[in-house]
Image (cartoon, rainbow, N blue to C red):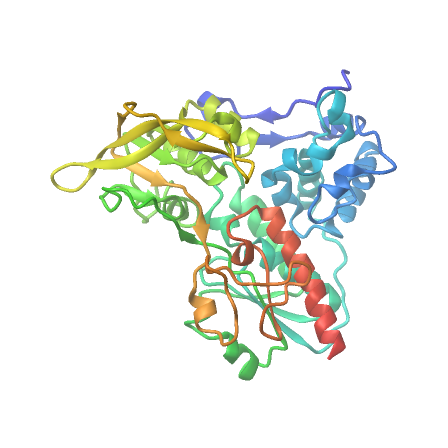
Length: 461
């Protein structure tokens, strides 16, 4: 075995997977996981742990896998990570734990994410759950939002003995995990629902179809429902647009709406009653993970797909694995390209996207190379659907209906980086509601930090 190379991971063939919504990555077998684990150097000063936002003791769990002690590995991970099967699939490991791996200096880093996924999947298939008995302390905490930050916060608080209730605006708990990430990257029934079932098993209660700020306010949670503290983990689901001509045409979608129809409402299924556009040719504007998800979903629904991104391929913010998969599946990348207008038919439907080529200037004070248009380089991409994937911002509903809750100019709630404490006593916040759109694992890290902040706050009272 070449110890400088990762054990290759099994995947669906690209020609097959573009015709279905089954998971692309098939994961390691037990033998493959043990073989990959033997590559770990078990560093005395593990930089990989420093690269993990939730500080999973990585060498320890990999050591257990190396010995074939898979359930012990899962138990170690679960002490820090409430959603290991999810994080093993969607975390940007190349820029976090694996990016710090010493093995990666003279070869390929350890496949930490794939090993985490293996341990979590192994335990789930064996129906194993870590111990969860915790003495109740008689205090109640409300969690707003059942996405990664809310779930992580709830999972840690219930271990401290709090009576925890999660309020979710949609009809299914999971937040971005169920509405934002496609089935072929993150299976909903086999992975997300079972991870959430484990949190329910720990004692966390969920109330769906409850919009905080409309169904009930935070003030009512305190005054009428008797909660002692509130954590706001409502995410950032308000889509952004470019403001170019033709953006209100029929056939223009935000990636948020498009993916919600497919992922949460299962519009990709033949039996679904939720409508979704199946375009002949789709243009996706943006270069992040959400753009890749939207593009790969449109491809599976029968479209020829172009991704239009105004910077170079080196600046693509999406995970390398997602870009690689998109290219394998035949998605066309129009890089250093920026839309200037959406062209429409006489009856208001999309018929194309007018674009201009870009070039990058020298890095500015932010360190990024700014894209500028090349005069005379305009061209048109024919299309009958455009999906805008330009990021999202928090919905202002909660802040606007809660007295004394400060926000910044982006409508993000202002909260302490380490404790999650907001401008109002007893209200904590974290994840995308505070930072704007980020990653699952960073949201989880914020949720965990806020759980400690809430515990310290309520213990001191």
